Length: 193
Image (tube, rainbow, N blue to C red; front, top):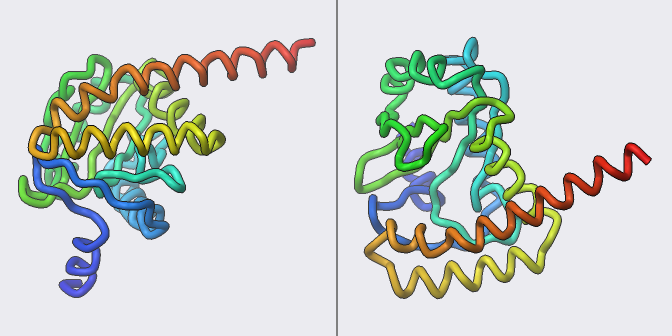
């Protein structure tokens, strides 16, 4: 177990407020799967869907080495019923972390954050945005390259200020979500015709 934790720290984990990007690592998917099983065992009765999201879920994307997990629930009251169980797994409850419509949890010490949970209403705005963004980038490698370039520039500029780093990515993220929604709408229209 200790050897495994030591190995995971080479792959995931980042000090709070710091920005460090690593090249895509396929081990992130395995670490997500392992954590998803753990989450199902602790709060499975509330989980309607669970997805690996964020840059660690996108092949070719550079990422902060923190595994982002979206958990779809019926409503945010059910999310709040999970606080005690998630705390026992090492997660810290952060209310909504500035994003209306989610409940947010961070795992790991402030010196070594390893996982984030974004718990939201299944198929609600927060859920859809997480999944649409991920899926669009998985299908559009040129967008991944553009996103990597933006993140590298911002990481150099804001290496000790994750808040500003994240805020400066907002317009790019919104533009990708808008494109993804447009693509989804076109697919629906094509299926109807």
